[in-house]
Structures are given as structure tokens and as C-alpha cells.
Image 1: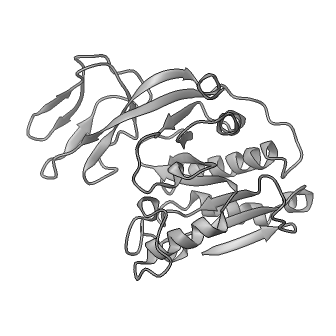
Image 2: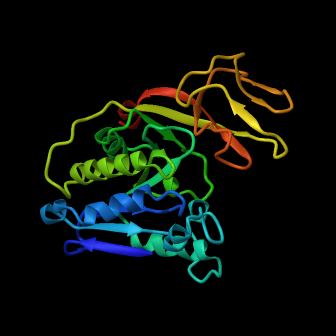
Length: 270
């Protein structure tokens, strides 16, 4: 794990600020955004300290999601574990203790950047609305060792995995986050961000290939076919929902998630 501290780190800073890239090694957008920032003129304008962390360096170097286990399912981790990501999760958690933290991911399901969070607060809503994001998926209650379930942690899914566009989106979100947290000077315009509460996962049969027929964050009406399998099975919506991270190829056993649309994020967290 690489940790770059800009400014004089004081535990009295309230709240301290951190940015994390490369939670998954095959999602380099966050690491690329951090590297770009470190060589930019913005470094000379910081107002308060920030930690910039490239988390899973081993997986990043190998171009793989993880080495031994999924880091984003390994929190809070185990400091003396023989499993690389379990130890790394514990180390990362120690580094960001007390911090307001922005993490970066990328997807194979959606080109536009969007946010993920859990247990919305006014601070999380303010951050999300300061970033150039139209959508935020709320994983409250989905407890499986994800970073998004950590206190004061929000994520950006920056775009298509491995793309230059995702790296550019991550960089723009990084700058906006540092501005809204007063690490960098400059006003940040508020962007209305729609809040989607994730309800449940849509599982795949491991012996089938899928085709998805709907778009993420677009309403699927009850009775509509939203996916089909090579065996001719139709997946039909029992009730209306809004897809999140829905992709035929993104995960071995998950097609994606169903969510309900709640409205403006800031309204739910006040």
C-alpha cells in the first residue's frame, strides 16, 4: 500500500481527509487520478492535509482484481492474516481511521460516473452533490465487508473499467472532493443527485450466458423482460425497479441489483 501525505498531518484536523484508489487492481482509474494529481500544480495550493492512498499495489501491478481475496469484501480485515487482502484491509482501515474518505472504482456496466454510499448523512449528501454525479446507489443494509459500509466513506464508480474516460472522470471527482472538503480552494457547484436504495441482488445461474435488455438507473416496469439467458429463459420484473450495476459479464454469480428510486439524495439525509 502506497500512502502519500500532503501537508502536515495533524490528528486535530477535523475531519481528516483521504482518497483511495486501486481497491481493485483491475480498476486503475483511481490510481491514475492520484498519480496525475501528485504531479499537478494543485499540490502547491492545498489548504489542509490529505492522504492519497493506492491500496492494492500488488493487484494493480498484476492487472487483476485481487491477489488472494476481494479487498472490497474483506473489511475490517485481520492484521496478522496470511491472506494479502485481509491484512491489507486492516492496514487501510488504520490509515483512514477518522477520515472522510473518497474511494474509486470502475465498472463494465455503465459509462457515466455515479456514486455509491451507505447510511446517508448530510455530509455524504453534500459530497455526492459536489461531485459531477447524476446518480447515487445506496447500499445501506448490504453488509458484506465493503468499503462503502465504513463510516465517512463514499465511492465513485468512474466509468468503464480500464478506460481513459474513467481515469478522467476520477480526476475531476477527486478535484471536486478536495474542494468541497476545503483541501483545495475553489467553489464547487452543487449537482442534484438522485438517490437509489438498493433492495436485493439479482443472481445468475453459473451455467448460463445472459443478455441484458435494460439500462442502469432507468425504470423497469412490472412485467417487463429485463434479461434473457441462452437457454431462452426470460427474467421478468415482478414489480418496478431501477437497475444498479446490471451487466451480463460483470460478475460470475450476480447480474446486478434491484433498487427503488427515492428522489434527491440531500432530501433523504437531512
